[in-house]
Length: 306
Ligand code: PSU
Ligand code: MN
Image (cartoon, rainbow, N blue to C red; front, side, top):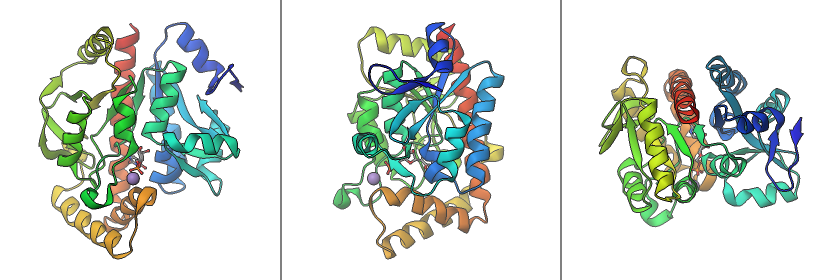
């Protein structure tokens, strides 16, 4: 049940009503379950994220493209379809026109989800880890469109940093150049997705959701158009063993280079290698990371709405 507005995206009745009433809403992406997580775990995690939000009295706005309709506030049937259908595309911002015109199903990345959520008026978005600069980018130019999109999309994104398969130092440099504020949630260490500390520092931290809400208001008052990135580390007692993490990472990079993997396939390939190399443990941590971000996203949305 979606409302087809005069223009896209379609916004579900529930999300539309919540926004109209000033109730807290949190957007969730769909690439994480169409391409980031294997079946059948993907559907369970997609549903759990919505349940966490509802339990906190926050309306979930899971976003994706169903039969060519970009939608903010997918129904449970839509989510199930994207989790189980064959041939679901991975859509970043530039892929949206094609997916719409050809009537495709697509999971939306952080970039595409941010764009659609912002158009719909949703201010807070929770995900696992962002895309960023890949190793070897100086020759491949492989930098996720998440970064340039976040530079021009005033949403608040809660993530456990960027995926640890990336060149994190280079990604932080790009975030600085693109003038995207990064705030550590109760930390001055930039998280490393599967691990609590990537080895890089952050200049700004916030101790509470209210402080993040004040930063959102300050950004808006200044007319800044960039996203606010909330870097939220996985609790240390739930992280992937840092030494194991280090080892499987370099194995995954070697495999990608050997097999000539490139472009949009790179991230799913590396995540899958890490899953196999850790005997599935990375999946549990991935779920934990996501849960933690959705929980903090709910608290920020409540503080920003209140
Ligand atoms: N984090 C995960 N799994 C994922 C992604 C992030 O744990 O699958 C997805 C996000 O949707 C992110 C995208 O926007 O990977 C980045 O892909 P690329 O590097 O091709 O832009
Ligand atoms: Mn890429």
